[in-house]
Length: 355
Image (cartoon, rainbow, N blue to C red; front, side, top):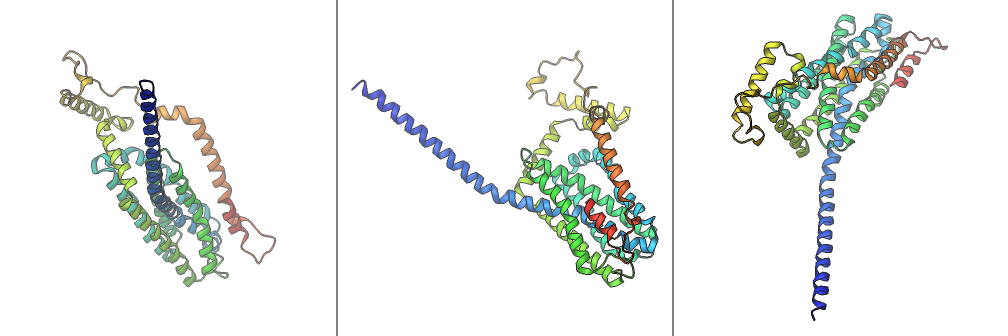
């Protein structure tokens, strides 16, 4: 009996382990099944938001033949500059201020505000573009507004996609796919409204209003998808709460130190010291700090944009050369002549092939 009892105990122990493993496996399967619809819905929302981020300026540039017939060959390079120029200053502005305002108003509210404002201006401006059919400066101004809104959305949604499910690349891939898919929707809209050629071939006033009206509706649908993503996704809300929590634990001044003057940096350091003193009673890492020892402050080893530039400048330079050369070639598409003098489709074909 004494020899059998340990065996009986071992058998029961193994059975208990197997039951625990089965229970954990079942729980994991249920969790995966529960999360799958949420991820799928967010993928769809990010895809639609990506479409809205680029569909407006893609629509404007796709009418290169139409605007060339009205304003001449200079129109297409000017519109390209209006679209792409805002990207760099907008990205720098977001790098300067986004973290500050996220900490001030909360990440969820700040992301929602930036995205909604950008979608609003893009939607309204796109709808009113036909009013600029006889004024290149007005058309350029409207295109610049669209380009700026697109740059804001690009930075906002790219960052949001990287924060939600950071271990998965599904959401950034969905957003990027939406950015590219907008060209197909613009082409379908152009064919459906028969707009995009010269004034004599598919350049009627009614067709122009119909074309930009449909594009504006597409932007509105993307805006709605963005609002639903922000307001109904528990994963987005959880990631924003985690971001807010991390911002309260970090020194905000250290994140913006490359752009602050000396006085602002000194104020940030003093604020950091005050916070560390006030929390010394509950933080074990500060218990050994004596009055004679200097408080930890923002160090020179903090990551700055100059540091990042030194580490990444070869990649940045290659990207600048690649993108600049591509834009330079594309800006001359409206000067391309077809062997068929009655056809105006070659520049438009080249435009869509490049995308």
